[in-house]
Length: 462
Image (cartoon, rainbow, N blue to C red):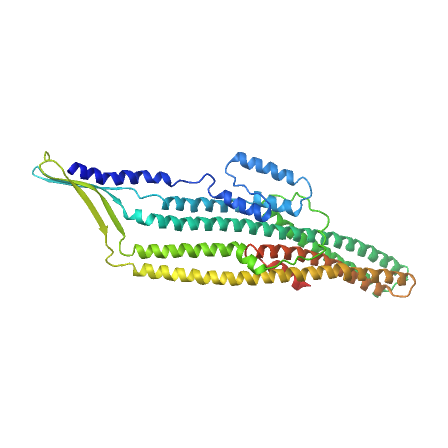
């Protein structure tokens, strides 16, 4: 009878020892879900580089993309493949999955032994116990960790999408800066020619010193403008280079910015779409659900910390006496903490998450409204420059040139008009840049928190 009872006690431990085989790591570490989300949102692929061979294959792919002037899609693809900071963030998936697998595995059995002897008398106690209470809490703990793992997947996906948006904005900024630099170089060369002509006319006695000084001043201003444009172009190009993860700037950008679309987009139900799609809202929902589960788990375990059960045997007396078989049950009783503090902390943490989720939802709706407002305003501004301001300045310049040839206007009127035309062309380049930046921000506002800092500063400068 004793042997049968002993066997019945051992049987659960044997079965329990087989359970850890059910909790294993996935083949992809959760990366395929992230790659699928990024593919659906951007149409681009991402890779988690884990070997030198994969790195070499990736370098060959990037080198192929760099052989021609890169488009905005090429720049985003290069950044998503080559940015080392992004590769580092993929490790978070492995950490989170390890926590999930650990939550699905049982703790190791515990073996304890007591041995004492005196004058040939022995007392030996041996016990093999196991924390059976973990069997009760394991499903709930695993569900909590699974939500956290899904939250990590969304967090990594959001980082990838943020990098894609930042690269798009850096690309358009670099392209606009390079176009503005080339235009200012042309203006500087024209001003240099005009200043040289003024010197010759001054020597010939046809111009006064004041007239020559005005031409020299215009040339000096054009030189400063070209220097500032070169500096802005350098900064924007290096920003793009860093995001693409390149160690050099040996790539070529197109000559001009993309044209303004014929019509501005007018999407419907922006706020509802944002609440359904934004990954930060989904992450907060998962966090709140995980904390709710954590709160329930804390309440369940508030009075019982550890309940261990297992077979035991005792030898007392002579060494040749037989062992007495039995069962050992141990229960850890919290004398100084009955769980009230842990429950109070869990409740406060949960309510904190609930309010944070509400705030994230409010901010998401506001940001998508602001994003579309900026997008629409930048489109109208760029269209106004394209259709009205630049053509009118061009027409005024042509008319002034005719009047100057007929000696109906002075050279000062011609120079003043030239400065106004330069400003209008540069303003159109900046307005076109701001439109593409605003479009990137609006698209980001539908899937995550946008960064309005760059377009705001540009629009303020107008």
